Image (cartoon, rainbow, N blue to C red; front, side, top):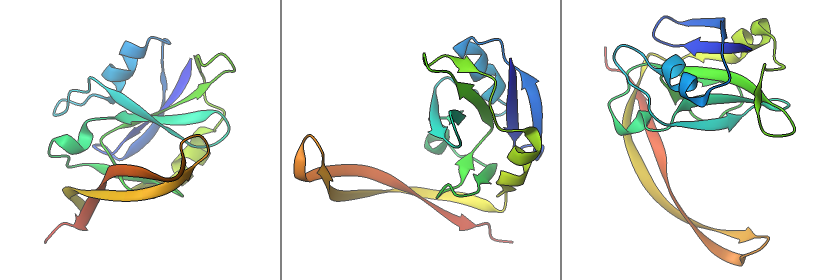
Length: 144
């Protein structure tokens, strides 16, 4: 199937072939300097999503991209795939040119730290004042 690979190491957005095996996603997201063995999925348009290295901020990432309308930079490569009604991977709906228009290279950034946060939310099942804990990534422009 067709997939779209976002490569901040070479600053390219290209179509690639994906065989449907989740292990192939690890290979496509890996780079000679970064071995990917777990991924997370970020929904974008329709049933399309960007797959990225889930552990990218636990190391020392050096290459980033931004997806327009997504609130933070993404470290390492990204792979765009679609999903059908059964949850299986399929070719994405988004065209290559549109994907290119949504990518902004952010290799002038460096990752600083994960900043812990606490908050509360009004959860539809767990109720009001449900505690939420997480980490917010902090970036800065590289010193010249």
